[in-house]
Image (tube, rainbow, N blue to C red; front, top):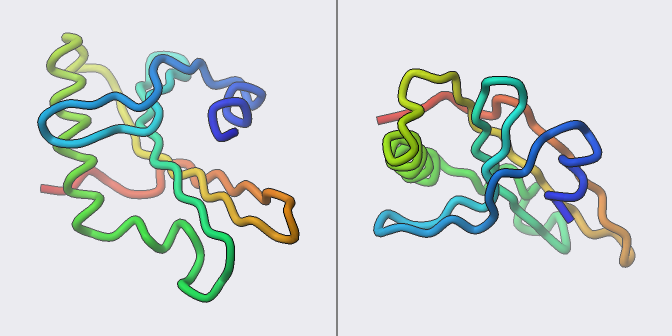
Length: 108
């Protein structure tokens, strides 16, 4: 659902569910020369907060390591990159998607 949403917004979907020793990247996209690493979060209720709120500092560090690995493995270390989040909130069987561009900076 998130990939289709981003594709309709003009993003090129490069890969889905990329796994390595460090973990998994939900979506890798391109827009122009920028590689975009997308974390997809979903919730069925507000009880535990909004989906995007679950992208903790620890998760950001993990995603940073994953992105560094990916960029290096593809020879893209000098190309621009960013981290986006697609939050999916289910309301009465309907999905409400929120796209947060440049959701956080790379962290160590």
